[in-house]
Length: 284
Image (cartoon, rainbow, N blue to C red):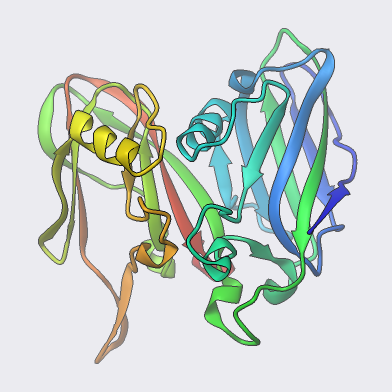
């Protein structure tokens, strides 16, 4: 609805952590942040070794990812590879309905937080400059008190390791399940991954799908699978209502839905895996 220039970045230097704290978004809804990469020698996206987004006084990030990883996710979603602009998307303009487009948008008024902190770690060898704009809109469309107003897109990244080639090896992948987050996607950032299986309540949901088959399906559905990345996508047709619930109501109140992440790899290595979820402030 409106693009606003955010506050200046501080400590923008080679091999440093640039930070920008803004209160300009509140009480509106954040759809995306566009960061311009400038300077005498602008940094590339690959030279952004860590991007973190934090809310309020919390030290726990709601986004934690590298520039290269985020760029790959954006390319998978069909965005262009613009050298000097990096988009941090919260809303999904490709979703099926207007309401679904806004599930991941960050409604600062609804969650009652005024401050957003963006930290970008820049690799050495450049003379960088950064500035950023935010696309903001009115409160979400779900109505007063609707639980969707509290949700926003979070990108949670962690390393996983393998000592050699294995088939369907269980891995602990952070998906904010304890907080009731809805699981949209998982990105495995390695050419080592040959297949992946997700089991829920002991039943296969995504059953040992090889990389080539998975990529072909995603390509058929209009995505752009990236080289050396295995992407599991519960919302592969951009129907955000297919994001997977990770808790359920039962006689004891709320309980976790048992999940297993079974990963097959061709050899030893350590690499990052990123979970793309709809989370809430209290669940991270």
